[in-house]
Length: 62
View 1 (cartoon, rainbow, N blue to C red):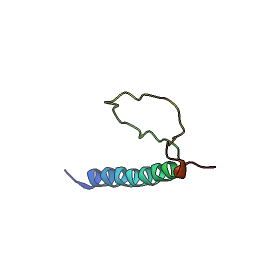
View 2 (view 1 turned 90 degrees about the horizontal axis):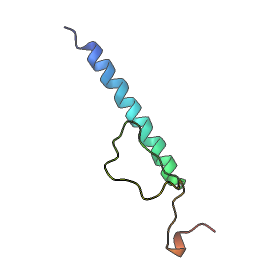
View 3 (view 1 turned 90 degrees about the vertical axis):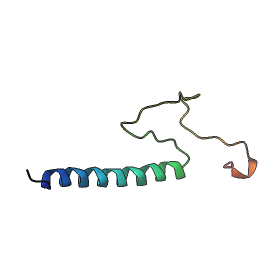
View 4 (view 1 turned 135 degrees about the vertical axis):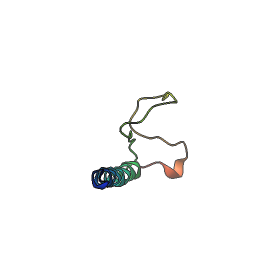
């Protein structure tokens, strides 16, 4: 049995993971929430609001 198909699938999944992490980082930098695909929510979210708010005045956008 050849291991080439397994290595190919692993490589594709790792590349997808890399790009999804970059995409999530950009979303977070813009103050948006990002839900990772294929994840299990163990803790129920308290709010479905997509924008992040902070209570510290120096961090709030004007």
